[in-house]
Amino acid sequence: MGSWLERNIIEPGKLPLLLALAAFVLTFLITRLITRLIRAGKGPFGNVSAGGTHIHHVVPGVVLTVVGGFCAVAGGQRGFGSALAAVVFGIGAGLVLDEFALILHLSDVYWTEEGRKSVEAVVLTASLVGLFLLGFSPFGVDGLDEDDLQSRGTAIATIVGNFAVALVALVKGKIRIAIFGVIIPFVALFGAIRLARPGSLWARRLYRRRPRARARARLRAYRHDRRWAGPTRKFQNWIGGTPGPEPTRALERH
Image (spheres, rainbow, N blue to C red):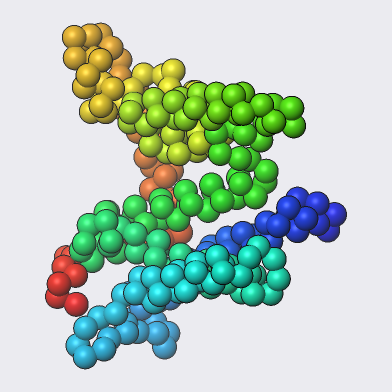
């Protein structure tokens, strides 16, 4: 383990990224634990207010993200300062993405169905950063040898080709596959060659005069959602808590 860490993390200068990821995940988990205790009325924790205004934890998260990001840019890639900046940035990013749904909807949807998007954003971000730490590079550049990398035309063609495949998967309505496909091109290729999801831009434009394709797309989407919706919800509830029926409160009221 020590040799792997030295060879794959420390020597390539990825230690700050590892520290940022660890701080990001731990901050999210601790924040969710505290908010669930507050929701249940247990423990010494409570909501933070100033002058009658509820302070969401996205606010200090933004501050920490900005401070950590600028310090990381100013401090280079190595040394204690860089590591500290990475931790500060990771903590801030964890606080911000924990309330990603709140920012997206401009409403306090933390404990609603819409609030699940925060958990999705955190899991997706952590997964992508983890893949990068394991050695995957965007658009499959890691698959090129030194001679290919020295050939600018080969590198550009590889990047453009993989980007195009990821873009097709995105247009077909497969957002998660397209995002992961940026890191692992084979994933994007899998999404690009399969039927588009109903309602996607691809389906609206290219399946408009193909009723059989529309019917197959709807049937495949129904089977996929029925198979994965339950386990996905259970996983999100286990991490972020079960959404409740309580009414939402607009941000303007805080």
